[in-house]
Image (cartoon, rainbow over all chains, first blue to last red; front, side, top):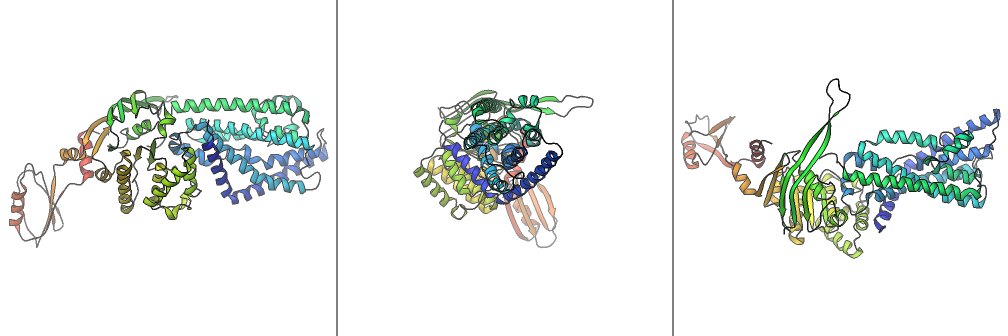
Length: 265
Length: 321
């Protein structure tokens, strides 16, 4: 497969993301605010009833979740609008594979969108006093593993969102499925409550679900909750889920093409 | 063998009907968008494809451009089946949907053109030459660094057309390309399309409701109604079938009462202006003029044909569309 077109659409979507600087600023302010609220909440919790997990680990979990929030939520409204209005007709008559064309686009938006917000936020969180801010990685090796795992998480979450888009082609309105998946996503990926605070039995099940592969896995490696020695296993489950979601997605898009109806004349 | 061969094409869509009272499940109904449509188009032809809304025009275009798969029938475009050999086929095809946009809304159009270069895997030099040519011919020079969202509809349509032609398609589908454009933009676009057809031998299939577009561009026209082809041939021939009315508008000095006119004439009075509608096959124009002249001193007189939209409306009516 020649990748020029896919790389180009990736670049284009990334460039578009860079145009919305106001949104980036707004996002950072909003996420910092949420971060501080959540951190205060956990500090209060720890003061009254200390948990087994160190406080700075939970606080770091919160900051990393907030920093990469953009990566989790499905937010490429342009793409959903295209499907809703039928502008997708143009993309359908291009000599490209639709699944990967949109995959590249979704990934660019998630990557650039979350880096633009995440980097200044993490810098801010690192400067906060101990117990309030982000702790440094467990070890240099942990940082490397976490970075690899984050990259894999990005691929996994993009595959998940491309399935949402494939479903949108059938329901013609992204709101229902996006609302449902975003709810599942924020809960199961640990954005509402750090998964490390869930009961152990629950965690064992959650580990095997796709949502933990996206952001929870890299954060565990960063904070050292999962040792670097276990990194291969963590990455293995991530790769497995990414492959499964990609397979489901390509099959869905293939079927969509066969029974396609386009909106609006 | 013709360049485009369409044989017995059928396509049915399933739609869900509103439920009747007391029913929980919706009923499904099928709409036959195309029933048994066949035609040939030769290379370099400029064909108009008309019909009322919902006739199946867009469905045909979507099948020919490889987007939709038909239920039955066969299509061959230059040796390829659009939906089966999709990627290879669409490389030679350009599409302009007048009501949709292919260029990116928030970035300068030049970036969209660069993306198209990658999508069609064009060679840098080929792309550059073609882009320069199109930019010149479509007068886009000053707009290249402007985002699409800041453009007027006319500018946008020129940019869309440029985008659709960058990869030098040998077959071009135009779906209502002049919709919403002002007179100047319309004329410019028509001239451009005519030139493109002449210079590059591009085969063009034009779907439109604007009969002026068809008259200006196409010598051949196909009429589609209720999913079937109703006419295929010369535009003038089509019009002459329904073009049975002439209109004489006349204004006199002062009030005038007309003598009885021959049977088949219809007179409409609007203020001091009289409009006489007649069929020249039944009433001789010279005779009618003589009668009008005898009635009083004529200040002003014009004779004209019925406008094309009326003819088409009449045609659709007679075809029971």
